[in-house]
Amino acid sequence: MAFFSSSFYLLLLSSIALSEAAGWVGVNYGRIADDLPPPEKVVKLLKDQGIDRIKLYDTDSTVLTALANSNISVVVALPNELLSSAAADSSFTDNWVQSSISHFYPSTKIDAIAVGNEVFVDPNNTTKFLVPAMKNVYTSLQKYNLHNSIKISSPIALTALASSFPTSSGSFKQDLIEPVIKPMLAFLRKTQSYLMINAYPFFAYASNSDKISLDYALFRDNPGVLDSGNGLKYSSLFEAQIDAVFAAMSALKYDDVKVVVTETGWPSKGDEKDVGASGENAASYNGNLVKRVLTGSGTPLRPNDPLNVFLFALFNENQKPGPTSERNYGLFYPNQQRVYDIPLTRADVESGSPTMVNGGSKAQVPSSKGQTWCVANGKTAAEKLQAGLDYACGEGGADCRPIQPGSTCYNPNSVEAHASYAFNSYYQKMARASGTCDFGGAAYVVSQPPQYGKCEFPTGN
Image 1 (cartoon, rainbow, N blue to C red):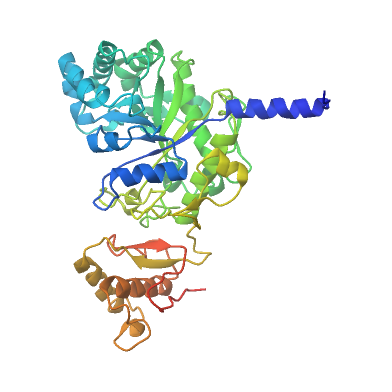
Image 2: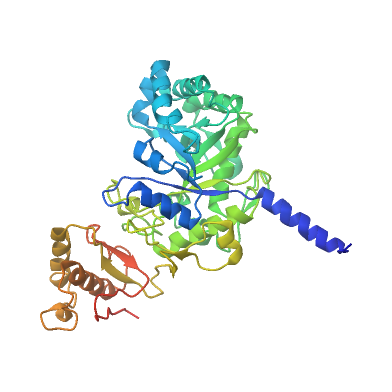
């Protein structure tokens, strides 16, 4: 028999406790884009990257079919526009559950349904339909004996809070409490489900960058923020935001309802008003969050409840409306290259080594401090590439002499190759500033030197 010191047992027990307290990380798979890979390739990407949980915004049959037998857990959604029908008629939810859920389950591992999304801020005033719709969907699941396997919830934004600072003062808006918050929390308690929260420290930082430390927002070393109300010290804005929700729930006597963060992320690019949007900050936020979730405990207010989160989002989505940042939350470009490198699994975190992507190439964090290049998106229409090429070589002031006939980078003689050279020349000329490698969605940043024949692409270093 081998004998071990008491310190070994303490270390062993602590590692077991740490493992049990750690949470999980999933990713949102949004599809508001016209250049994404087909679902079959997306499933392969997910498996290659070790991502075993995703969240959808609908019940698209092509996607759910592709996910069959993949062992990837899926949260599906009943969109806001269907809430009124779902609330009014249980036969509607019966048919919806039959065609959108039971038809695919259990081959497709559906484990939750998000009924609506951020309904309280829906301009179509669908709030009154939310809880009745949730109840009808649950009743329909019961008819197919799926109610014990599939949870029902609804993602809410932090704008549902009347107060979130200090954290201990967290409270829901008064006009939401009686009509919808209390009935929803009661439903979640009764069905042993959890509250879905969408939390974005980026928005708080971008609006208050003069008051909020960037290190505090990005999980980096910082002095922390002491909550005078509960005496707890917060080392990250994310945890403070989640605990503000817990405080609001506690004020209504729903301390026992769990929480899953169904959206959180940081954009890698943005407009002038999107303060802090950059590849470097996005990599810091998401990478440090993953490490925090997979190796840490819960929040200061609920240390024994694991943090479970879905990162937003899998891909950059080029057709999302709004500011530039809305189209640049992706972990991956549509060509399946990483926007930046972060760990996504416990094995990645524990090894401390770069995640391998695209058949073994190491992805790097695109950063103004490192070597990055700008290249054309080969899936973009030739006319759009040509327009970007014309701008870069003309008004943009790029050095396009090397792609003229007879020059070193003329071959290969293609619009994509020439546009890539011109885009990169402009990008380097602009000191690789955020937003200078876009060209209307026709270009993106890479961290490995582009290869077009024998042409060498310059850097600004």
